[in-house]
Length: 398
Ligand code: PLP
Image 1 (tube, rainbow, N blue to C red):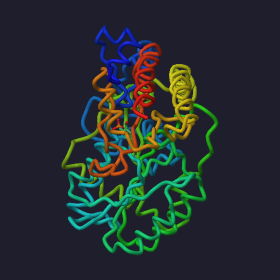
Image 2 (tube, rainbow, N blue to C red):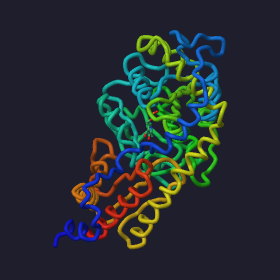
Image 3 (tube, helix red, strand yellow):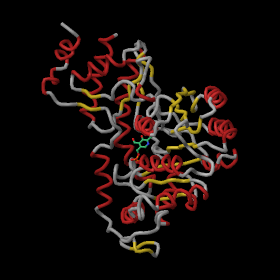
Image 4 (cartoon, rainbow, N blue to C red):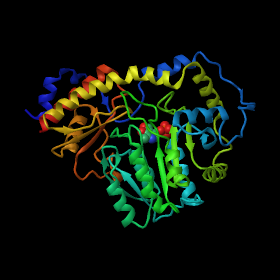
């Protein structure tokens, strides 16, 4: 009997041919129901901050929405823009503005290279690849990117012109960078401050599930290290209220704001202020902290369940993983270098995982080790089944 037949025999419910999916970090419908419950209690505003929000204009966003973003990101409202729904598409626009117009201290061209702490977020890599930028991988240390590796790249690569970081509950490794790591990183980068872009994707700024280190404002650290004009600090409410229908925020220096707004004025006559107004009203009925606590009630049991299976596999020496304290993901590293075989076998049993290499630039995971696990979307019962399939496949392949 081959492995697949054996597992099908042990898990008879596989005959139902239900498809299981751990690919994307999507909120579950239970999470979205929490947001809907509060949305139903509020009325859509049409005027706010003395502005008719039905109309074009206010390219920097509604003042109250900027204040909301500043609250989430730990920035100041004056230095924070409230824009449309996706921080990823803002990142695309930042790169585009850096490439076609240039920021004062971040001018990109086809020779620009981006430093990428790895494992990282597949959509970041695809975005950089789309611009034709070469990506240089560096590993992680415990408290953020490996700074020795970073120093080496900065010294050796004349065209290193940027870095992309997810500083809290990193996708997918769960790293939260220490202040010491960030200060040293920014100090190292300061040698390139005349032309360097720090993409600081703070997507999980307030997504703690367990006690997590406190972080100082990256803006303040950047100012102290002389790289404030190099920092592009992003976040959104996608994983707070409604994925795909939230507000994305961008915090940066006033000179970068001016340049970016000038660029954006040709992209859009203004952000969606109706949605910004709705979100401002939303957070008058429930604070961001209360909202995150409610989401935690849904997400934490899923993380605990996932961890039960991974810790058993780790104890048997079949994988390495770090217990995340928040965010949306786990990273599974196959100690025997069998990630592709695991992904393929799971697929044949109806469990979808991201393809091998998704957490690496250009899709290349030469050690055949890394699999991202995104446990938030399925309900608990389906997640249990996903992890049963996954765990049996890992055990039988080793
Ligand atoms: N950045 C990171 C690190 C993410 O994990 C995600 C979504 O999974 C995003 C950005 C997408 O955010 P948005 O919906 O604001 O584009």
